[in-house]
Length: 303
Image 1 (tube, rainbow, N blue to C red):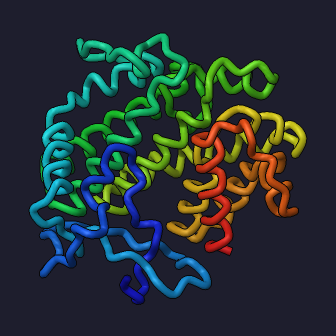
Image 2: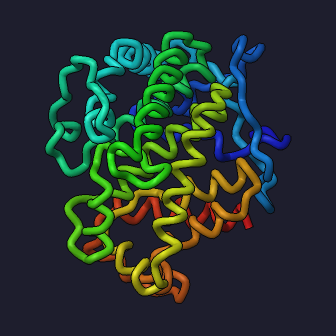
């Protein structure tokens, strides 16, 4: 592990992209960084950490099953149609879908989790650029960010509050706060926030930064209005790693507003028993709980 001021937050976080920079037995440091692989460093470093991973552009895979997986993943990342990924965002924000066919499955226009995959693709493309210098992936990320900015800019016409960005109606958050959630809206938003952050820090896209900060501002506004009891009630519904991504945004910017927002997502019903040394995890959905603990670890290292 490198002991310089390299930050652990630069690990891959996108699902499906782990093959680009994981599998430690096959990893070797690169001789030189990828040309043009820009990284926007965080304003604040982790506290109390003495070892850090290598940066993504300092790592290469050798010939192996991991290289094969990387190549397959890269082929798919180059293939995916960005306009189809944008369909639900554009439709929700009252913009033309430009004739793109809607996706199916979890991205179908009537599915409750729609527009959660797009953030994974943003992270994947950003990481492919940082690791491999792949310009196709960089360009896809930049195009998606530019189109998401148009969606966000049309919020007034769509009837949404400033900064909102999703394929879900903003009224889904009214339902969540009323205790009658229709889906897992913060789980979905977390992916987009994380993807925008990765495009900013790995590609250096300042438009991604601007969209991200407006979007995070909406999250802060939405959650700051709630009492502690009301906020904790919303956390009964899966919310992904909202505390993690907002903590990372705090470290990236140095703005304590984002740390305060992150801490609102600390789920007392899960954290308090653990802090007291009690195991009350039986029967809980692991994929719901693990991101919360990752967020707690991020908060600890940040503070």
